[in-house]
Image 1 (tube, rainbow, N blue to C red):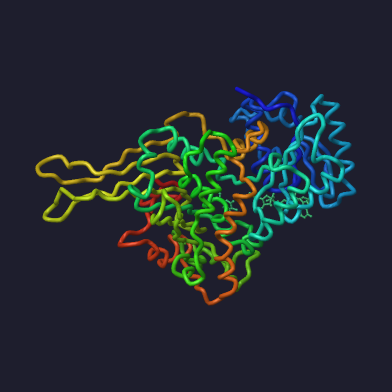
Image 2: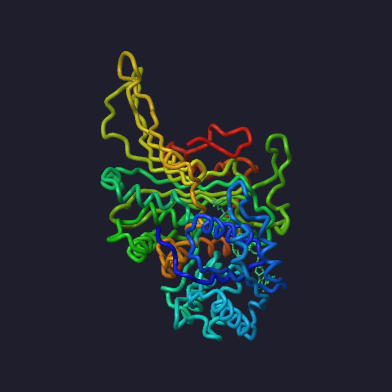
Amino acid sequence: MNTPESHILVIFGASGDLTKRKLIPAICKLHHEKRLPEKFAILGASRTEMTDEEFRKSVTDFLPQEDNKCKCDEFLDKLYYQPLGTANADEYGKLKDRLEELKEKLDIPGNYIFYLSTPPKLYGIIPANLASVGLNKQDDGYTRLIVEKPFGNNLETAQKLNKELLDYFDEKQIYRIDHYLGKETVQNMLVARFSNGIFEPIWNRNFIERVEISSAESLGVEGRGGYYDQSGAMRDMVQNHLLQLVGMVGMEPPVVAEADAIRNETLKVFQSLRPLKPEEISSNVIRGQYIESHIKNELVNGYRSEKGVDPESRTETFLAMKFYIDNWRWAGVPFYIRTGKKLPTRVTEVVIKFRPTPHHLFQEDGVTAHVTNQLIIRIQPDEGILLKFGLKEPGAGFRVQPVNMDFHYSDLSDVGLPTAYERLLLDCMMGDQTLYLRGDAVEAAWSFVQPILDAWEENPSLPIYGYPAGSWGPQEADALIEGEDTWRYPCKNLSDDGTYCEL
Ligand SMILES: NC(=O)C1=CN([C@@H]2O[C@H](COP(=O)(O)OP(=O)(O)OC[C@H]3O[C@@H](n4cnc5c(N)ncnc54)[C@H](OP(=O)(O)O)[C@@H]3O)[C@@H](O)[C@H]2O)C=CC1
Ligand SMILES: O=C1O[C@H](COP(=O)(O)O)[C@@H](O)[C@H](O)[C@H]1O
């Protein structure tokens, strides 16, 4: 197993939530699995005054405990901390000195990864500050920059941020994170499509009637009301995570399995998204906001009562939309995507609905019997792939009944799947940008959603529908689907606590 070169990972925003809950535990797990080099250090940096010891203590509660056999003590020794006025260029000299000191003490070459886990307003400032003390390029190693989401708040700010980063770093040094690309099953879509002979020949408009992608969450805004109210489902989930899934489903086979070959194909998908005209928006994009309701006899607040949310907010917590990819493969095939908070459960899946047979041979009591073939790729939870098709019911006649061919990812190994952050951090350490976003693709995704955001802003009379917390969103979303069909409602068999549903 290859391990990355020795390096120092600097986390800006080290006293924050993401560092404690996701980044440090992911790195601890990589360390425990011996995926990290022996000579390696993490240097946390933020304004809060802390010593190395205090920083170590601040993250211990979030680390996997002894049962999971994470050797935390040994790992904690690799953590250091530097108080830093992140926005203040004058303070970066002391960051540079500290890095020099650690490099010498630990005998690590000048390989640095800078992780921006601060409020987004600092994403353009930190690179300039690093450059002001020459930390953007190293003579004796590499320098990489990981940029957290959100990447801009609209097309203009995303373009501005790209420019600010590129003023000091090359594209090859920039790793824009979208944690959906770190999910095993998202990557598995590429392998399922391009390592099998059976899917690709039918993966096109001749055989596929429509594509549906849903990402439902049962949680609400969970204390992030202030952020979410400025963002909404379009910026929070659609512009990034859901469009990335569209890219994976829609792309042409890359020439080679390399970062730029794959990212070129994603970009082409985004460039082929047919822009919605202003007059098409209200009938092709359905916005919703959850309202007060009872879930299992408990009163659940509506979105407008959440902390940090404007009591008259018109921010969408649900979004469903229909659009087309104007290219040879997908001409005329509708893509439907849907996401929302406070839905009945947490589930993300891609549904490929195939066209029916050209002629229906079998009849049941005088009625044509056939089954819609569907391939369901479950991203989470209970990751897997399900194929639905029709077979003969045993006994007389030719009754057709739907059957399932069902693969659960957990059958492949009893070792749990790595978290998205484990995978993505390791990739950056190895210098692999495949699962990170390229600047042009981020801008292309923004170009598609921007006219919709503009129309909402310019025309406050465009509707936003209330939906009871705990429901599948506004009924208007069903009308998006062509014909008499509906969305797949995946969790008919919800577990009692509503957290798990079968594939
Ligand atoms: N938390 C999560 O699950 C996720 C977070 N993200 C993104 O990651 C980034 C960090 O998120 P999160 O950790 O939740 O945020 P927090 O607010 O919890 O932490 C922000 C960090 O930035 C530091 N900071 C430095 N300069 C400033 C400043 N001028 N103003 C305020 N804080 C400053 C803060 O420390 P100090 O005050 O000591 O300087 C703190 O360590 C955000 O951009 C967020 O969008 C993305 C996906 C998920
Ligand atoms: O980036 C975000 O993603 C989460 C959903 O991620 P998942 O891995 O749990 O599917 C979402 O809750 C959050 O609002 C958003 O910022």
